[in-house]
Length: 235
Image 1 (cartoon, rainbow, N blue to C red):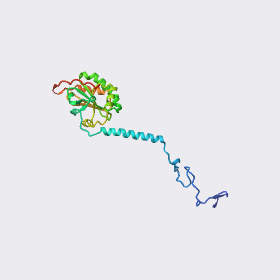
Image 2 (cartoon, rainbow, N blue to C red):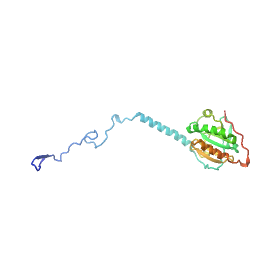
Image 3 (cartoon, rainbow, N blue to C red):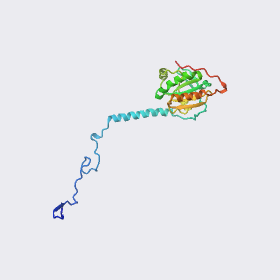
Image 4 (cartoon, one colour):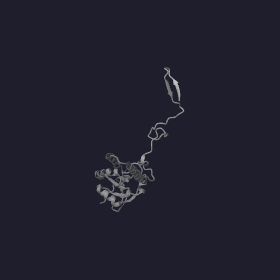
């Protein structure tokens, strides 16, 4: 060390800078560790089991809904207002075949739905009420079940919901003909002339559905064909 004199003559010892002092333990580590370094977690970095379970449930939900979305988003076609409604023949819950074009002369609310669809459970009672209200004016609601449930499950759903209109067992080809049905519920409103006058994707208000029904009813049948007889729901 060296000694320097202050102005009052008192000696002051000065430590030579060549000797380095140990660095303080900033983050609880050993000397020589990087300042601010976070020490490793004890126990080898164990993770919270509850957090892993939550992440697993989220991933499973994403896969489930992603799978259904992929099934519903097949090849799309150009379905616009004033386009003729694609014709089809599907089996009803009572085993009979039903053809859409046989309803020419009536206003048709074609509703794509599924038993696993939460919004469909909200919408279905409205469709039951609207069928009762406008059936005498020429409205025919048709439900097309687009899910993996068996006929028995679909029939039970329809019975529990008090469905008063025909329910058909859907096929992917029919969904594709109507644009792939990217979301459920999805409804197409078909005029008496067989042309689409409006469509609704997803759950909307009852009033909006009723307005679209009125548009379909306010059309003229081609060649003044008489309206088809009302269809009865399957028992």
